[in-house]
Amino acid sequence: MENVDICHVESSFKTLEDRFIKLSESQSLISNKFEVVNKNVEEFRRTVTQLSEKIIALEEVATDRKKLKNEIRSLKNRIDELYAIVKEGKEDESIASDDAQDVESCHSGFSCSSKVTMTTGLDRDTIRAAYEDVRSDNSPTEWAVFKFDGARIVCSARGSDFTEFRTQFSDDDRAFGYLRLQMGDEMSKRKKFMFMTWVGPNVSVINRAKMSTDKAIIKDIISNFAVELQLENQSEIDIDQFKDALNRAGGANYGTGIRDL
Image 1 (cartoon, rainbow, N blue to C red):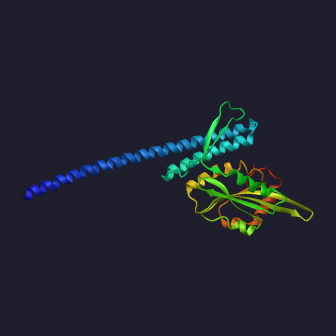
Image 2: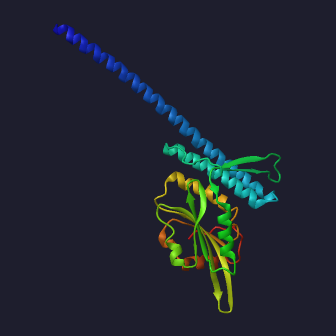
């Protein structure tokens, strides 16, 4: 009887051992496949980066340089976004909605058209109204803040007090700001405009990667400014630093320049 029990235990142990071996083999196979996929993604990203650099070089002969550069940058940023998603092992948090935009373009010197699907939507009416409000000489509004409401960018606040403007940006936020600042002295007063991108220190890698693409979308409306700042720390939201950046920028470039503090 004892021999029977021993045989049964040995048989059960052998069965478990075989299953463990198969499980280990399956795990190794999955790991190998993931490694191959990851290497392919990295190679794909390098290839796209090289392609982007070459196409950007061709913009010197394009008639619409700004549009070409922005669209190429959007494509590259989307690749970076997908790369971050794969590397983090997470699902894409973008949610396709009725506001998803299909941007179709045909560049000078190119015979084909391309489509880029933007999963982030815009509340265009409120964003444009806030933009024009800040720009108006007849309005006391000196700033507007734009944040994410689900998969849409909306105008979340407007005002004239810079102290209130600073409170709009938390460590968990992604947001954009548009400001009108009084520059010059008593003999030469003038208004200048600034566009600000805010990515709080607690924002995830994936959402950081998305920010560049989302910025390109909102800049379709907010296009006139002398300086663009990209900030991640509350101490950088400082009116003196803003004015210094505007002074260094000189004349308005209508959205083509980027100044990092």
